[in-house]
Image (cartoon, rainbow, N blue to C red; front, side):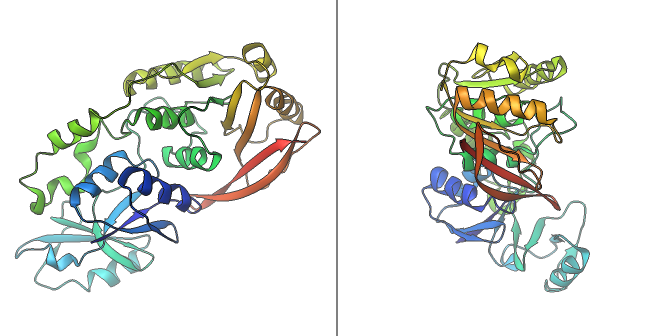
Length: 329
């Protein structure tokens, strides 16, 4: 059996690594997705519940093998023309129901299959958000590209509503970002799985969470409203494995010692004044071993403290953001 984990443009390596980490399977990178083979549907349930890079998971099986007489279906894609084209491929024996189909279908770059999950980019615990919020999937891809892993200390000095920190905290704890909305998975209502107790299945995955250790994750902002939002969202998500501080970037060296932080991973506010950028670079070069930014595509600032080592573009909706890897100059 085959399936497709759909992700953002540029997020394919992170998604491939996640399929390997969670399922022990080696996937094949295709545009904006990873295709992989599996043996048991429980593997797809697990990936759906624990993935942080996935926008959607599509089961690559013939839809008509899953439809019974009288069943309804619905085809979704990036454009209406594609939906109509692929909808016409389904036998007239089955009717269209756009709101509550028995079998939702999805087309990704001419690959047609069963929409196993629906949209996975939502994080329901993020109630208090920032106007410059990132999607959780984007934040996770950023962390993966930066090389974040257990045992490394992490700082986001422009934390906003804490998206990057929350993705890191969930990852370390092995806690699902969809713990509170798992009943929205499409596959739960598939007739084929009517005898499966999904409450027990997800509870078993929850019981495998890693015990929280002393925090090495730090969220910093100079805005009180950001600090308040992070604390409220953390309470909703039931996360305590990180530290929160109100601090200006020019005071970072008062909180962290030289080279104390393994990774700075952050999404700075757009169009930061050069004065603030310069001070941030000065502070970051002193306290951190590695610095990775997510910025506008035209960002190219470097100075005597930090230089641009490499960049990579990540698709965010119809736009793009740039990953900037900095090293000491």
